Image 1 (tube, rainbow, N blue to C red):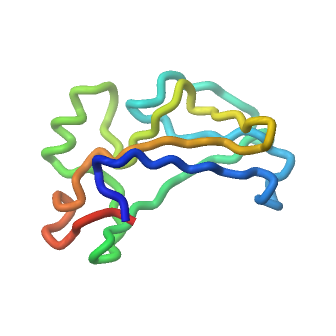
Image 2 (image 1 turned 30 degrees about the vertical axis):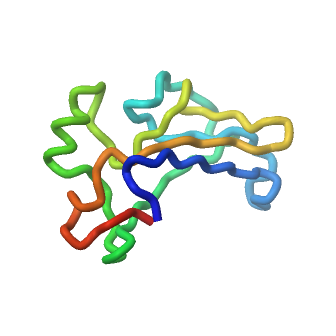
Amino acid sequence: MVRRECQVVLNIKFKELSSVTTRKSLVIPSTAGVRTEDYYDEGEVVHLSVRVFGADTQNEYKSVCGACSKREGKRKGKPSLVDFYSASNVIKASKDEVAQVKFKFSCYPKHQGPNESAYL
């Protein structure tokens, strides 16, 4: 379970993804915490998407609530439930073929529903 205050770090190992072994870069969604958008040929990258579920209700959530939208909206762009942190939306894998992705949630789980305590 993950709470809003926690930063999540994913290490994606390309050599363990048999269908994408020739690809060495990961494209993350452009959010307020991503500084630049770089373009890459579609054949060279893997696109990452994150699905968020409530730990208690198992409901899928795709956006921030009204209060968090107002708070997060002061930053650039439309607020996203998952806010990635990176210098670019394209993350190149290291020599050992691992790409590290960092993100936080932009809305408290309880704002999604009174019975939610955390995200999955």
